Length: 545
Image (cartoon, rainbow, N blue to C red; front, side, top):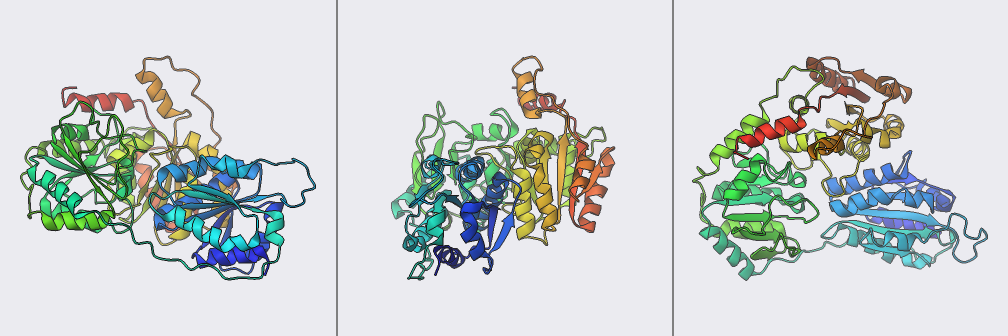
């Protein structure tokens, strides 16, 4: 058996459904081995998009997504999306090619030490130097990528190793990883801290956005009556329509949610991930914090929890819930007024008729159109904060945002992965005009794959979030404006369907018709960001800040 055949057999053994990427001559043996495989190869127009798609597959399934590139520039083009997966806790296996390592004839042409280049970005990086190593290294790569905390793993398969013959074609079976349970003493300490609290709050973080965590958290909230809020990447674990939900920590420390945080005497922090901007700071505060996570707390000068429950989150929450009295914190009068003000403010501009449209109205319209299981994939820009703060999620991973690397260019490829995986669900990519153009060439890939999806482009002809921060610091408006193509014609040039919104009441019917007709749609949406600072300042005045 050829080593590349064995590699594909090992990937099939891992349950790989897709490989996203752009091959080069160093991958041709592997590409040939894929011809007879049940694994689908998804050819993209840029390696970065391939890795964004593979990372999104990992994010949604908990199983490592797979991307492929050649050596040199192909591998370097993967770097941003690998960092996106690593910081965002998304399982990803990266495969790169390389020149022959036994008898190279091209000197240093396109040669970089990709294994060492990847090491700071991934959980593990290895070169395969013998074909017989393939089963063990592939099994190890998937195990490392998928175990907590999930992330990226890199394997380099040189051209001559891929083409060599191997005698043994045995692969290593996948094994269920049984996560460690927290100690009884840790559970007792957490229960004691919660029982003694007068104003407890539950914080749902990024680490809780995993399989099998939603139900135990819901049981805990329903039994104890404790109110909860979430970080941006913890959004959707529990429903935004739950009567216990306060809101999302999306803006500054003076936003609505933070008023509740300041009044709380205990924060039960489930799934905290230091990669996100902290929604609260312990330094100088008298609050107690219970840290419940798969791994111990990363101690910083702003985060040093007094109680740690380290182990399987689902198991920990089940045991804590069992040990607490029913309706422990049903008296929620201290936080109800804050919740009511949050809800009123979030929905205050849902029906605003001004044009260009305000982001608050756009969020409300998108929510009205999408089913409960519809997916919104956000790129990075000012709109991300409005969606994080205002968009109500009903199921996990129905609002995909990146609050870790926070890179532009990920929104469209991530939405494409969703549309590929879930063709029966509504999928919307929301991008700024700047971020959209970073990977807009993937419209061709989406059309070629016959995907059904909508891309909404927030068009303000500028890098809007940086302009907002520039103004917030009292600096002159400088160097952040640009010109855009005609997005309707641009979409049509790829075979997609373009739309331009010219009034605030056009977005909903345009989206509804796009979903009804199917195919790839691009909506050019002029947006008014001028009220960003004004709106936020008005909100803060309600709390006397």
